Amino acid sequence: MNTSSSRLHLLLTAAMFAVLIWSGLAPYDRATWLMEVAPVLIAFPLMLATYRRFPLTDLLYVLILLHAIVLMVGGAYTYARVPFGFDLQQWLGLGRNPYDKIGHFFQGFVPALVAREILLRGRHIAGRKMLAFVVVCIVLAISATYELIEWGAAVAMGQGADEFLGTQGDQWDTQSDMFTALIGSIAALLLLARWQDRQIAAIERI
Image 1 (spheres, rainbow, N blue to C red):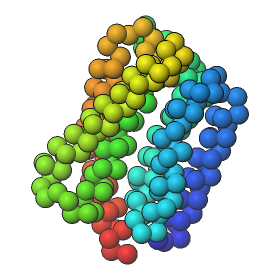
Image 2 (image 1 turned 120 degrees about the vertical axis):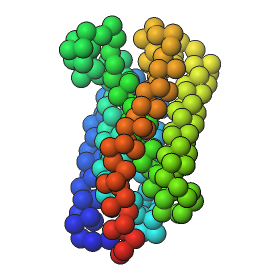
Image 3 (image 1 turned 180 degrees about the vertical axis):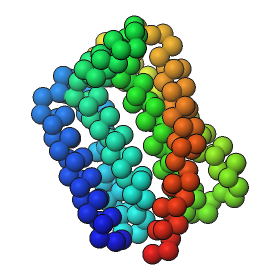
Image 4 (image 1 turned 180 degrees about the horizontal axis):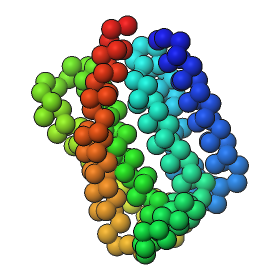
């Protein structure tokens, strides 16, 4: 790991903790905050534990931080109340706060590149078309699993799960969430696959 990458990783870590502390100081609903930031609290220790034997590309670390920020902001306000979402709603003339769709787009965009990097570096799949297909399938599986978790929360918590679900009265919210993740995964593959390939090649030369 070169010095510039190490400094970048320290900066990203500091930024993540700063936003995490801010989001947890006075969230709108503490239980919702905990459920929304749970992926961050799970992923960071895993990345820390595997940092030396399987460091990810700088591109992926930056994107993971951006995804984490989306989750932590959503946890602080709840997705239906994020101020930026209200701005988007007004600019685009929408009937609801769309911030949760940003979260689900990232839920497809970032995991697609995580899965792609692991599959490529482990030589698990031969053929770029098959790689893209499997990556998209993994993203859809992750998205469906998350929706099942939301369903489980709704069953367990009743009305208390409304802030976590953030459906805002949309009966097709589950389906549109998964479709948004699908769009995110495809966008990631189309926009960043070659950039990721170059960074993977650089890591493998070290």
